Image (cartoon, one colour):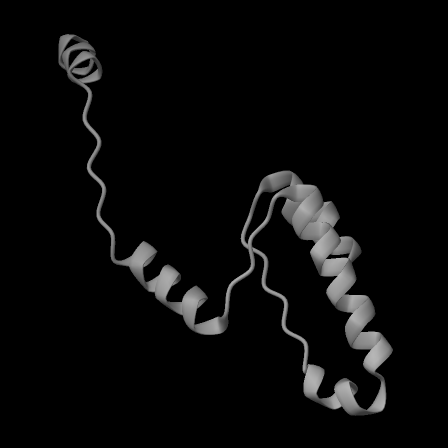
Amino acid sequence: MKGLARYSAPWDTLTSYYMHSEYDAVLNPQKVEKRAQELDAFRDTYNYNFMSENQLAKTMAATHNTNVNVQSKLLLDLFYKV
């Protein structure tokens, strides 16, 4: 959890966190509750959002398949004058 606050939060980058909670839900439910509280505090402190694996996959696919073309007449005019 320290890595999330140290690396992801300052740079506002995507954060991937996966926990096999089905194992601990039976054997150690306090561990699941503690981790949920930590992630909730991280989300509140740094204004992050969490999503499911399917949502993340669809978001990444949309990002990789998006084409953005930015043009500035001022920059083009300056470029061709040089």
